[in-house]
Amino acid sequence: MKKSTKLALGIAAVLPFASATSFAATATSLGSTTNTDLTVKAHVVASCHLDTPTALDFGAINADTKNSVDGQTTISVNNCYTVNNQNPSLYIATGAGSTNTYQMTDSAGNVINYGLFSDASHTASKELTPYNASDATGKVIPISNGVGSATIYGQIPAGQDFSGFAGQSFSQTVHVQVEF
Image (cartoon, rainbow, N blue to C red; front, side, top):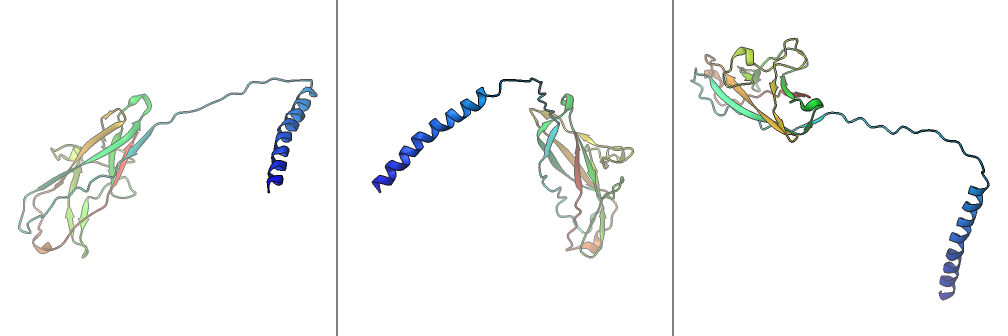
């Protein structure tokens, strides 16, 4: 075993010398050169990561209520760096089209209408729309050091009849879109 170890070391010591000699001989035998320029490029694109929002939960609603019910949630972004440091805009979509249908349903298909708004006034002109709507209404998300958040205000309007919905749970999944 000692003999094979010495033999392996002897070969390893000869190989680097032989390799260096081979490369040196090749480099000196070329004799001619040519030159050109190489352009090195990079393009930095805008990026913005949308955090998973907490559900907007209107909570327990009494079956006999005729009043409006309000709720809110916060939508946050991080690592958000935009062209010219513009603040991104938040949009909500309930489907693939350019209009929203804000309707929560239960397992039996019963419906509770609601709205999502950019401010607490709940006015129709502040209702959030999809990005692709011709008259898109979004909410600006102020950004500082790549991080920002915006509050979304929900309202179940007054006057709906919940008397037949006791014990039922309602929900709708909407799509949050951020333009940056």
